[in-house]
Image (cartoon, rainbow, N blue to C red; front, side):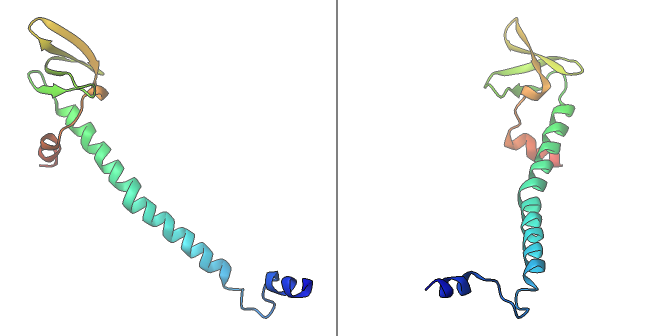
Length: 110
């Protein structure tokens, strides 16, 4: 019984297992390529699109923050926007806090 178990667990000695290492390597490389093209690359494209949208925002544009505040840009600085959310009520937000909507995403592509 022990000999049978040993034979089942022992690797092939006649050279049949020699190509297994290269097939495993090809499989890993293939999986990494699939992850890159279906997950990483689209995310990078979307991030560039969002950054382009935020860089094109100017005084007078209406925006929505990621927190859900709606307002109009009254001042654009290097890293922040000043937006007016009500008459006479202005807040300063980071540019990264501006959300992008689907219509803006389509317009940014054009």
